Length: 90
Image 1 (cartoon, one colour):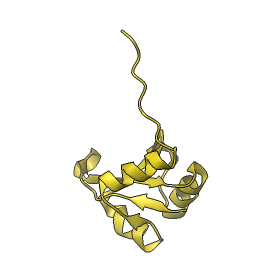
Image 2 (cartoon, rainbow, N blue to C red):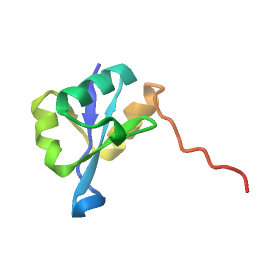
Image 3 (tube, one colour):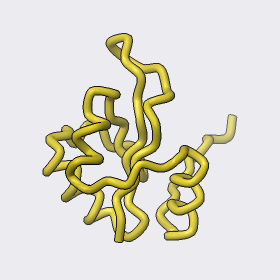
């Protein structure tokens, strides 16, 4: 049971770089950690939270495991928690 965070490599709002925060166990674990971290519910997107670079160090200090983006995705898929975007037919 682990919450994972990748490096803040994704450009986003407010000129910040962003990370993904996921669980390799359950979405409940992820949501509980997000509350502890002070991340708003609106930051949740299907299977992860988008968090700004300003939160990365605090997430790690609270117990999130810092991993590469590739490792984060591999473990999310292995846990069966990956939720891909659904593309609507035209």
